[in-house]
Length: 472
Image 1 (cartoon, one colour):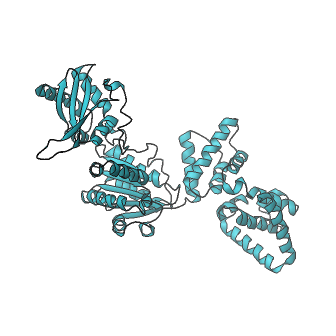
Image 2 (cartoon, rainbow, N blue to C red):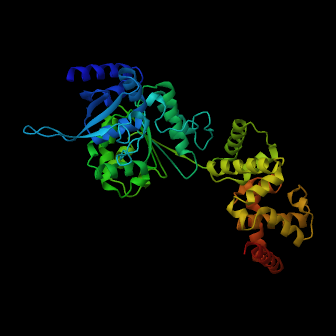
Image 3 (cartoon, rainbow, N blue to C red):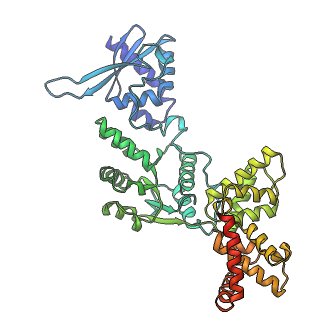
């Protein structure tokens, strides 16, 4: 029967080769040995349990097509898995697993719950569909500004010539929500689009750590290492979480060295530059510095405007310009929060069937932004100050230079700086579009008057009590 099973498997391989990339074929199918054909059941020998689990998780549909094409609809597959490679005196020890749940129902049932891949990786090659990259993160949707221009340009250069530029590794760092993950995915997606035969893998540091732990537990560290050594472009997100994990750092050090020496591209993100990463081995940190380190900063006002407009265009929305500017001025922390506010605003408008206007934007922000949610907001400060000094609220935002109004405006700016997290630019915007230098001058003027005028100081204390009642 050996000849028959070999012929059947050879026919299967011919069909499989036409459906998957050559690299995948060589990695996952060339090592397989056909051992028996009994009725419609073909038994194949694979080198490890991990190998078996990988085939079951990622190539079951390819195998199904091949087996049913060669053996007919009743065709079934059985695995002989080597669990001990043996030695000169004894043969390898194997165990048998039917394809699927173990009941020999062929390809109609799912893989056994007992035998799941310890790595939970998805094939980066399977019909060019998945390298764990999110298709929504591209360079087209990554808005460029002064805050990210270097990182974006470097990322684009890497995407055009992975492993060839001097930007290897490319380390992108920055705070939460500034676009590190977006840029990392965009690089991977651009490479995938232009060089589809490349083996690209995106993985978070947390996932890498968990995969390694499972590999150690299952005595499959070599399988784990061999898999990562095949990668052409490795993207590791949040490498700061390797801190304090010595064995993980050691295995990553060897993987890094091999990939780098082989001309493979490595892309990493972290919350800090290499020099500020704590708990990482010095030999690893020195390698992080081999290529280019680029930072992502908080987006400036112009970039925030562009992000909002880009999101609007993607959603097919038309939002008034005053709302766009209000959002851009009010949310100056990071891109993620800005997009979240915009999504909430759109949802509010859709659910309540209301027009997207400035009032709706303000109401939406009150439910999201921390300093507006339960504490004192700029609108409330303006209202409180105008009522206290018995002036029209609109005058605080107007260009009038009447002394009593100028002082009230300066006091409102002072409290806005004191009680909210708004930037100086944002505060100036809420007072008729004034610039940050006007706010600085207002705060200084109020402080000077507090120091020199007891009546003025008493007024400020009185206003503080009213505002604190609101915040408490």
